[in-house]
Length: 171
Image (cartoon, rainbow, N blue to C red; front, side):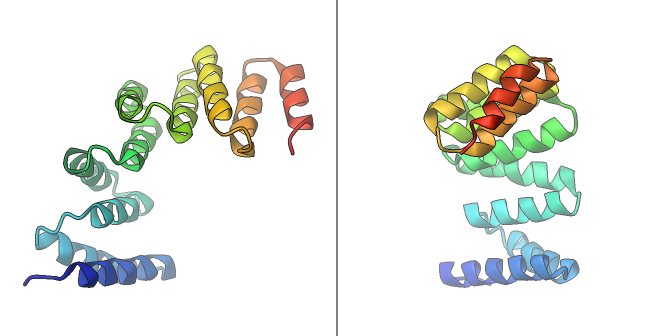
């Protein structure tokens, strides 16, 4: 059965709603129906990947994100989602590779540097974590989340006074 783009989008929206409502089996059936038709739109791959991540089907989620990267290599969100799973699996090296690949595509994306910082922090590479989050802050100075992450890293690396000062100056 062939689907129009608008129909695919509608089905994805319904699956997202079912997911949000906790009707996981219904959401999964909708996603599987589309995937089994070999419909690999970016929206479907990301939505179904996030769904699988959320229900802890990490192998499927990773495969969907990898497929999305292969088919849509300029979409940075996919790299970040894949790196997040790899980082949570303690596969720091591969998470860093994925994020550095994303950085080659989009040099000035603050979210990439934010995620690099989180990943370096997990690796206890505090210097690299601070350098990365500083660049994210430079790119988006009003983003308070980046500053909070920097304060956390400073605290974790026993730079409590700097962390306190940073938190005091949050606006």
